[in-house]
Length: 294
Image (cartoon, rainbow, N blue to C red; front, side):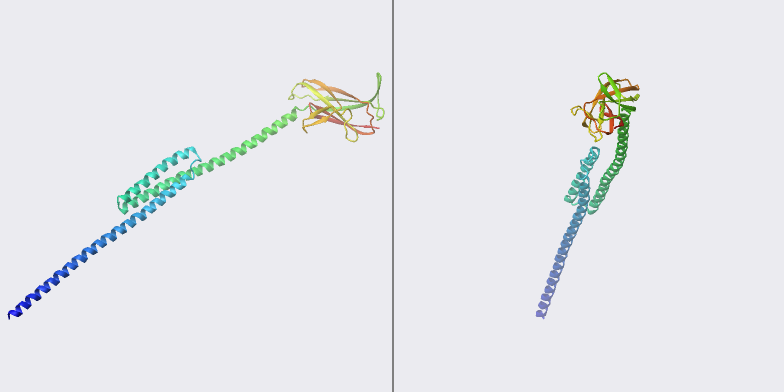
């Protein structure tokens, strides 16, 4: 009987120890599970923080890249971009601090929205600049076109004025003479002619500059050569080249019509054919006349 009692006591003790052991294991594994859950939650939370941080950094970096591409193009724009750049830098520092301080994901998401808003502001600044620049460029192009048109009109007016200043020779009459001593007789015989006389009117011109003018007369033979010495030259204002002339005469021009006679004496043997006389005033073409020697 005593033996049965002892056996029952031992069994109770074993069962009690087993229950205590089981409770201990349950508590231990429960605690471990809680620690693991907290660790997993912390890792997940940190991953979320880093993910949001990456989004914030992306927004800020893109905004900065866009702004940097427009720096140096406009002084007023640069001032605005410097201010926006300071805001971007400050925002980035705040994000770094929030992550370091293990802030909540919601706080960081709020910062993400602020960063997106800041980027939108930067984009608006850039877009406004682009629109203003395009508008100014269009206005500048229109102004340049107007200026070019005005410059061309002024150039045309100057050209017309210069042409208007030219003195015109008209009503030209040519008489060829055979001069012998003090006598002279008109003739159209080429072999007898030794003086070519041209008389013409130099027109009245109110816009021409008054003063002394040099009148040049060129006599062309039937082959187009200049009759007379080949060492007399003037500068043709139209061709910008030196041109041989037959004779010249000074004139004091007073903006009034004047009748001029120019004589060209030559010992050169003249050939039959069609001749031409051209008149130039200070190197500018004034008029012409043709005649025939037989």
